[in-house]
Amino acid sequence: MIKIIDTFQEFRKVFCNKLDLSVNEKVELWDKKYIFKYPELERKIKEDYELNGYNWQEIAKKLVFNNIEKNYKKMIQAYQNIVQIINKTSKKSFEMFNLNLELNVVLYCGLGNSAGWVNKYEGKRAILFGIEKIAELKWHTLEKLEPLVAHELCHVIHFELRGEDDLPRGIKKTKYNLGIWRIYEEGFAQFYQNKLLGKNVDSRGKKWMEQCNEKRRTLKKLYKEALEVGNTQNFFGDWFEVLCINDAGYFLGAELIKKLDQKYCIEDLARLNFEIIKKEVLTYLSE
Image (cartoon, rainbow, N blue to C red; front, side, top):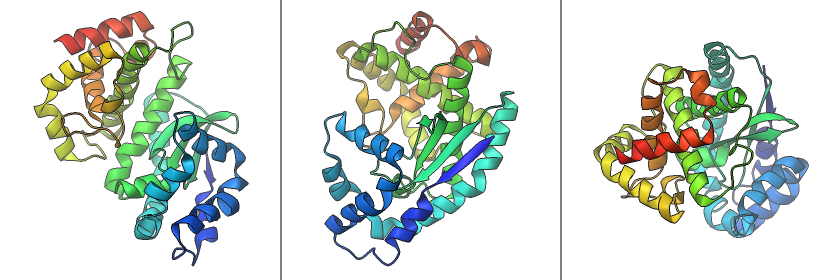
């Protein structure tokens, strides 16, 4: 069962007829009139930057609220489309994987943190959808949102089957280990989103998939090299790129899991211990 926690309606109310304010005034409005009403959400959004050495106010001014007026219509469309598809897609995913769980779905306007991310909210597992980031990426259409929603749901399924949503207990959080885990974790969601939707699609588009496929061998070599120096960040996130491609790690991860899906049942694949994950990742990258 899912519960939609809709803070975006409050954002719309606060920003109604205020889109022509200065950037600084918009940041102040977001901070003092909207997000402060949701302390847990506010903490997650701001700490996502602060804990990684960024100043959230500077991010807000330079990357978010300078574009809010331009992106506002896309934000409304994104919000309406998520509301339209979330119940149907979540029901299908729970039936497909034979799970019955409680899930919070948070709709909000943040600081460009992520289009979608899985976390805890109000004490339960949750998917947080950043409407402003979805609009920025131009993922506001049903065609683009279906893979995003399916991807985040497959993270939820994975973590539920596994019983944890991070590196296993006892495994040190080194950059090397995080790089091994990330390609496996994102690959699981990327591969099974297509199983869930019954088609090979991605929010990034067909051209992205073709580019990744064309450069697959080089991307694998570069990921292995990045692992060895502890710097796989450029393979994940639209702020970074490898060979002029964003998010190449998602493609590589899906290829990895496609191979492992022929070797393990989904339950075993979801619960692989870290040493086996590491062995399978290194084998895949070396092929």
